[in-house]
Image 1: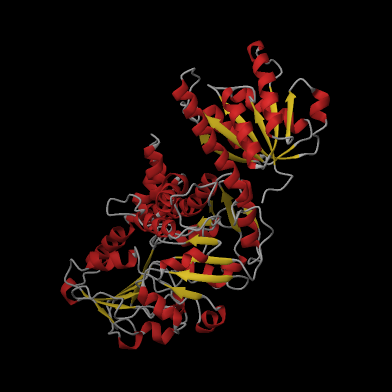
Image 2: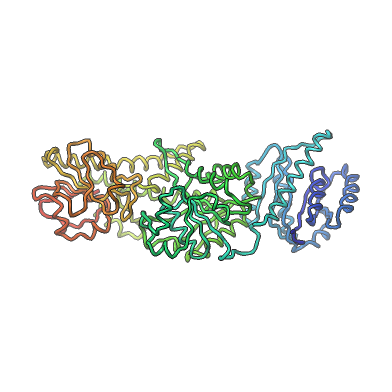
Length: 613
């Protein structure tokens, strides 16, 4: 049912398109205010009489105003306008923007703007105006109207067909059974679906389950079966946390039809050419599209380049659902900030960034997250802004670590201890505390390539970002060559050398080996006749692929080694006492490569040569 408060203001109401739209909206039950500009063409006077007669015959729910009738417009001060319909003719952006300003200054409460565009589509000028309107918390709906003025009857019939489509879009937007303008979220009734139950999706699902009914979907049946048994192989969630969450875990995509919100948290890796690989995101969007109910809000959390959600995901959702975003369903973007292995910064206390294609959806997304977080939710003006904010979070870290890695290589040439330099520099209040190291995983070592890709598409070559990536990606080879130099300088025989690698995951205290630079060091060393043994308490033999001479051992199974590479600072390694640490090395001359700079001098026996970045 339409509310009496749902008033539509139609501009150009004496023109063919505005006139037909006014009639149609009246038939649909809306209250219509028809308005013309101050300087209306004299050729429209006869049509004005005809229009007013026809409209009044249709309904008393119509008011005609001229923009010059200040007294008449003043009468509508404080009125909530559900839609202002603007017809974009050529580049009439200035006129339309001035008109919206005029309405606001007249005291009207404008909620939404419908832009009816012609063949030219959206100009940069119009795009700027739309951005400003959105910043003023107004929703903007864009509708294409390819029809030109013509006396041809066929064209006029086409006008009526197009206007009918515009009217239906407006009505559907306001009367959808699950419209986002409904009352505030009901925790007991709201259903949140989470698509992708990995390092990001599972903590999010558990977090939402504290307030809402949650459906956790993943295409991996084995993963679903494990979660149903309250087992999380990533180690992010405990058995009790899963048991108490009451999440409905499923690999049946039809279950998504019951969701009011669907949160998408699938991986966004790169391919062998270091270009964005969006296949998983596209497949997830297609799955959701096939099972999308009217009024649902889809929230993407996966890290992407600016524009991906609107240019890639929304078209897939529309194609597979046969529905229109902004009319039948809505889309938002709230980038994930989960830090795997971090028990201090968790889903509930990490501040979120929220965005959407319209203000009402943004408010719903804001409310959804705010009810489950103790941290703030920061709203931004557009999805692209949110996408960009996420990608620079990790790109910033990549650049800073690359700077540290380059300093390390320079200081090795100068025979200076990098960590002593950083400690001294850190005595200044504004020196940033970064250290050299390996940059792997699915975030810092991947996300910059998404921004690099999009920059190139737009015609800009990001040399600085690319240089940082090249330097960080080259660190495994640099470390490997540094070890070969140490072996040569200390006259050790390669064929007799045993090397122990402590840690093989991409970061500490997790079981994730994706894009592991420690593993790349092992592969580099395998081209030499070394005996290599790997110890990592966070992975299983099933996870670890035996690489030729490499074997996976528990710490008490390790043979004494000539070289120990302290690659990943798992807690189990950091907590080793001096005797256990020294027992890893042979009694004769040995080498310790500390890639994280955390081994103190008193841990070393006299026969151990220390090397660190």
